[in-house]
Image 1: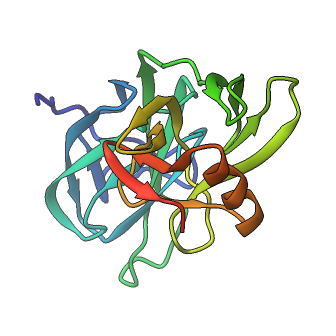
Image 2: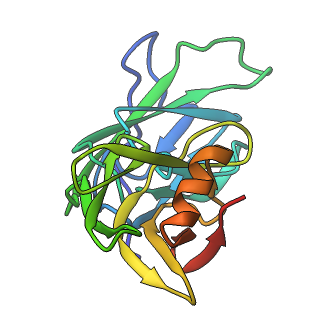
Amino acid sequence: MMFAAAPAVRSYAGGGIEDCLDLGDTTIRIPAGSTYKMRLRAVYDYTYYIAGATSSATFLECSFKSGSQDVVFHIGEDEQDKNIFFYFYVSDERLQTTDKYGIVEVYVQDIKPASTSIPAAIKVGKTGSLMQSGNISMLYNESGVGMASFSLSDGKGHMLSYIQKGIVNNGAAYFQLSSGVDYGKPAISESDKAVMTANGYAGVCVNGKYIDWP
């Protein structure tokens, strides 16, 4: 992937940063679900913060250490925000200040509409729906009555973002989900699990990986 050098980023507060951190780009266009490699030269250790992202799969892959290096911007496939700001701050005991920082603005391209509802067969031979609201999916019957819900978890108590894609079969029915991370697992209560199982749904398929209800 190509990247181009640019003038050193200036601080937006607290004086210039040009002697501390040289960012290869100040504005980048990245399609949702893609990555972008950028050259960075850091005289001091640094950290970063993100403003505007909606996807848990939007992040920066970096060393946080001084030196010349490549950093990789990851934009989640389910990202919905058009403008995301990555704030790079000097974070080093050798330089006792947090006032020096630079910004890289990412213009997210090809944003995919968030899935809200897919048809879902239920046990009685009728068709209900699986409706997504934020990071939670709810199974509704043909009358629009909620039956059971689930989410994706990182295993540490945090919900992950995802996009509903449909229903696939692997000996049983699974809800097909697309997520920016591969380690997500379904989080569901025992009562909702019983409802899902009774209606023929054995779990979820995350990025092609079949995962039964826990």
